[in-house]
Amino acid sequence: DKTTISVAVPSTATVGDLKRVVEGETCVLVKRQKLTGLPKAPDDALLSSLKIKRPVMKLMLIGSAEKDIQAVAEAKVDESVVDDLFDVEDGEEDFPVAQRPENLVKLEVRIDKWRPNILNPSRPDCKLLVLDIDYTLFDHRSSVETPVELMRPFLHEFLTVAYNSGFDIIIWSATSMKWVELKMKELGVTDSTNFKIAALVDSSAMITVTDEKHGTFNTKPLPVVWAHFPQYGPHNTLMFDDLRRNFIMNPQTGLKIRPCRNLPVTRDSDEELLFLSKYLLAISTVDDFTKLDHRRWERYLEKHAKYVVVRKSE
Ligand code: MG
Image (cartoon, rainbow, N blue to C red; front, side, top):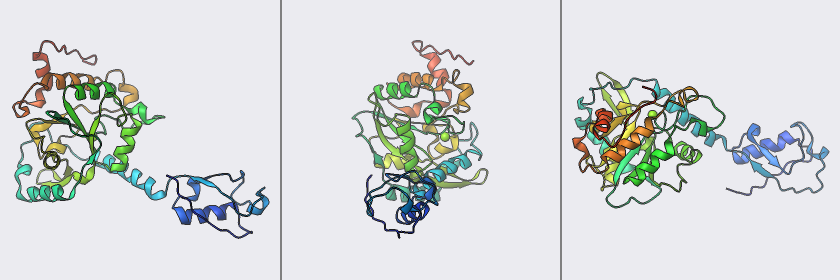
């Protein structure tokens, strides 16, 4: 986005002075500024000593405002902190958080206030797949050169199979919308020509619940999504997440995937999305998902002879 701003500095000003004035006008910190059109010079060089002929000069500023960078950084920190909390254990999904009146009130408030970020229209007669990002589609901890190296193997194949098997796809991350958009763009997900993402959802659709055993935590309640997309419900929705507590308000609908971690080492053996795409294909003709037990998804696959299940890693 280009915006033109005018700044004036005295004739005795240095490059650093100019940058500080620009910082004041744009919130882009001095250290993040790149002023093209300005001759290369240290910050303490006098502007008058540079070969600038005209008293009025057009410069182009490249750099992000600090508040934007911080929003992204905070969003990232958020989920890292969350990661280190507990998860609900296998078989514990039925604790009564989902029925508590105070949580139903929180749901109503969310449904009222939250608005989805719709990217593409939902298709008629489609089911819904809701996907977490961190550790589900993306290993956000390992250090690598580019984000694409942290993309889980088979991600694009998986999304293509899901889309072509009649699943509309919603991405839901416990971070900020800015971060969700950035990641999905970096991974080539939002502009793929093979599949379309229906909507992006961030932490603003989550609610905070409390339980004696687990304490207070944030969760991703599907009823909020269902209220805004009435064609979907428990009968045709499936949610993938590496944390079981994220589907505590709709336990039957969740499938806890193996987390995608340490990709530089696990890249060759991580076939989770490949096999999950086979599962999606297998259940795409099932009319009522409430009859499925997603904890046994691999057993379900084995029963369907046409889907051969062989994991390299096992
Ligand atoms: Mg996650």
